[in-house]
Length: 160
Image (cartoon, rainbow, N blue to C red):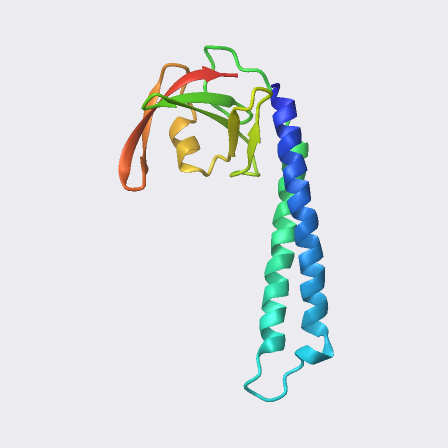
C-alpha cells in the first residue's frame, strides 16, 4: 500500500477521534457552567472539577487538530535503498524473527493502520525511542533500544 494511503487511513482515525473529543469537550463545557455545577458550599468542588476536565479536553482537541494539520501537510517521499531513515520513511525492521513496519510521521504517533495485505503499520514520531534509535540509519543497520527493561535489537531490512 502506498504511503499516501497509509497516511489517509491514519488521518481518518485521527479525525474520528477529534470529532469524538470535540463532542465530549462541548458536553463537559456545558456541564461545567450548568447551574447544577455551582457550589452549594465552600467544600463543593463539582464545578471546579468539571472546569478542569473541560480545559483538559479542550487542550486535547487542540493537540488533535494540530496532529491532523501536520499529517495533512506531510508530503511522503520515496526513499532509495542507500538513503537513511528520516521523516515519511516506511521502515521495515526485524527483531528476533518478527517483522514490524513503522511509518515515521511528524504527529499521530501510536496510530496503527494496515497495508492492503493486512500487515499492521505503526505510526511513530521522532520523539519515540525507536525512532530516535533508527533516525539516520540505513538498510542493514542494526540498532538496539531498551524495551521493558531489556535491550532489544532491531535490523532495518527495508526503507521505502
